[in-house]
Length: 132
Image (tube, rainbow, N blue to C red; front, side, top):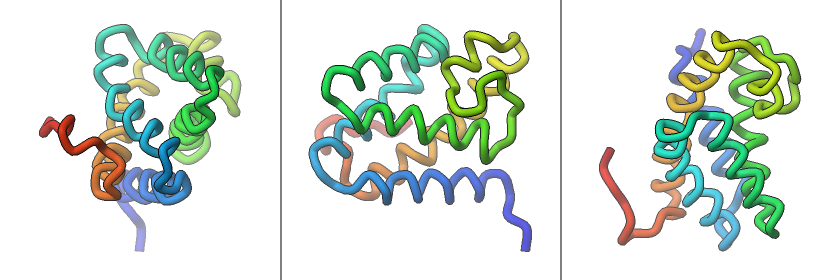
């Protein structure tokens, strides 16, 4: 049986959440994933990913994993042709406006699943939950 695109997104997001565990670093991953759609809408996908990678350098290794999970989905699994197949941010910098538009749409759709599953696993702060 063939899975729908949304089912494939959900499966990948679930596996990503399962892999990060349930420690404090996993909660940081979930917090940043939850903020990412707002950052994307406000500043753009490239700037939002740059922010995540900058925070990852400041001893938050799970945030690099967030970028890797998003890159894996958009480029490897979703198959959107990229200039730098292993790095979404670099592909945005070297790509065209069509790539940026498609990647942005796909990341936002993917983050809906990722954030729901993080919430389901209890990685979100209870007092900061929102119902988008």
